[in-house]
Image (cartoon, rainbow, N blue to C red; front, side, top):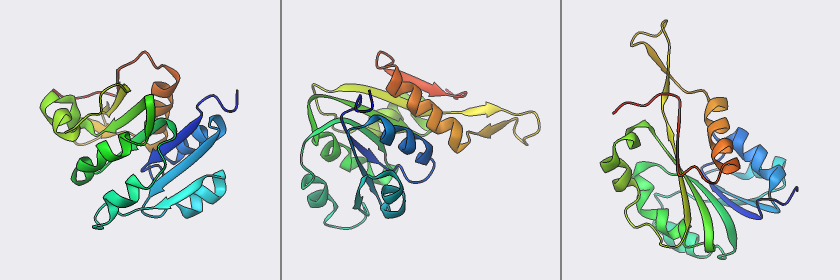
Length: 173
């Protein structure tokens, strides 16, 4: 159904995740897009835009002001903003579903733990770890993922809730 994902909170979905944002918007009853400049994409998708810069001192209050109504949250957070993850998680309904997108260094469990300093209990958690692809033409024999590959990985995780961890491409470690 077109409302299969319910109410969705998407953080950091305007850049490399824009393709996933477009797909999610078609599956969600309502999409709330949080980013530094979400307005243009939100307008295109009929989503609610919440302009938020995690460096601003009022970021925690702004996040807490979102009403806790979300069935699914997809979070792509800068490492320096990892401390805000729990505030976003708190906006999920009890038993809600969380998809965290992590850079390749999260293949290391210690890095992954540091990026999730205070996980909220009782959520259905999934993590998508962004790897790389072998590429004989690249200087070091590998290339980073394209935006389309990254979005496809996030969509795959959303479509397969049983996968607790999904690595897109190769990963070191």
